[in-house]
Amino acid sequence: MDDELLQRLQRFVQLDDLSQLVSELLEERVRQLEQAETDTAMRDGYLATRRYRQVLQLDWQVVDGEGWPE
Image 1: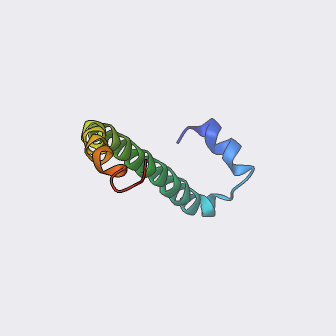
Image 2 (image 1 turned 45 degrees about the vertical axis):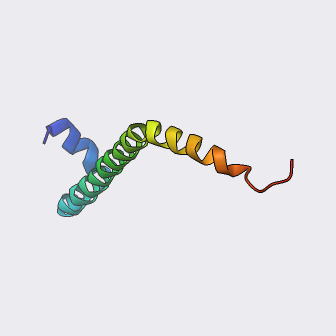
C-alpha cells in the first residue's frame, strides 16, 4: 500500500482494524461489480428478445379485440 495513503487512512482507522476495513471495502466493491454484471445481462437479454416480443405482440393484437362489441 502507498505510504501516503496509509498515513491518510490512519486518521480514521487503527492499523489493527485495517484488514477488516479492506475486507469490507472489497466485499462492497465485488457486490457492485456483480450488480453491474447482472444489470448488463438483463439489459442484453431484454434487447436480445426485443424482436420476439414485437412479433408476439403482433400475434396477440389479432385476439385482443376478439369477442368485444365494436
